[in-house]
Length: 262
Image 1 (cartoon, rainbow, N blue to C red):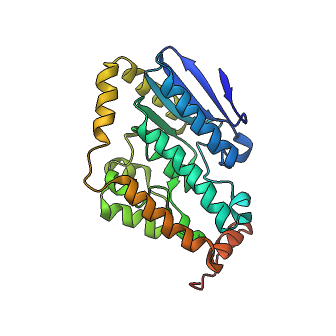
Image 2: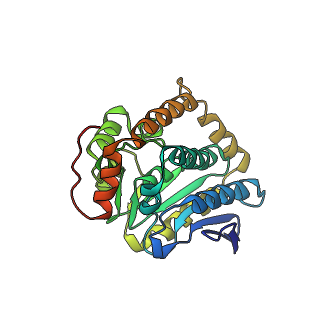
């Protein structure tokens, strides 16, 4: 076992598999700057290890990831949000571009940033009772770390719009039906099943897997980088608004927000 940087993430190795585990159970594995940095470093370390042929992305305890740490997000100004989201985008790009296949095990909650963290994974295992969704429109913003770009490539533009614009959790069985997740299992079986899938991948031809993943990067005509840049620019426009402040305050105060469109 090895801890990374700020000790918010650890790597456990089992044969040809590496498990990248978010280790902040007291915070429901919510991400702050240190967690994002640790995850980026961990994924890079795993990808550079020739002895690792597949990896999992898991959360310690009963929750995969409850998104970003809300108090941190509420306190940031627009420039600080810009810097943080660029760092998070770097993490997602690192997962997306690795030639080591990644299996995400999503249990308990995979919400907002926690949802978007799973999108670059190659396979996703979801718990049957997990809260899984992108709720940002309820906070006065919109999901802007791949939900308008990566998500439509997975489920189609219509379903992606439904998930983004309603801000509702997606039913696990529906998530499987629309190919958002690979399979749905019992909550207490998520981590084990993710590890099983990763172990299966370790037995496949490593160069075949690596080259297939690289080829998938060339699948779409519209460059993902351009779409992500547009998404980021538009997202930063809403971070300076009154509604963004109201959305976060309402969430912290456990009340319904009152949006005014400004």
